[in-house]
Length: 148
Image (cartoon, rainbow, N blue to C red):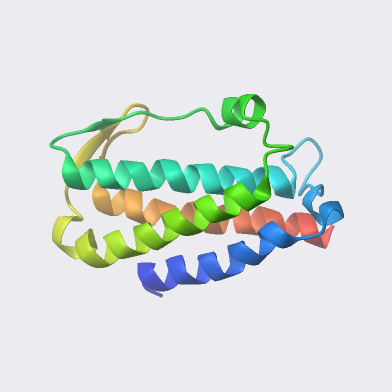
């Protein structure tokens, strides 16, 4: 499966989850873990962060990209009550743009390097691949939560 196939498939699987009934959104995949709602808000925010990183790597010479603390975002941005309509729109818009950027630049600029503040030297291809991997990782957790 190509990266574009993965991005399209995970988008199609993720978008309907934003419209789940409230009771389903409060489920977790394990005790003490984030709820489905929190995972969806995180996916939208992470999609935004990854999208912005991809744009920086394409447009700016030798960027240094800063990590973000997902647990602090969860707490201080109140993922437990953040409106899912906003997160859904944010996720979808960023995903559409990432798909476009992958189509335009994955092959030609994929080897472009950047420095991540925590993991060090990476490439544009690495960051684009991470979008699909990250989404699938959290979809797996959501599926587990919904099966409980």
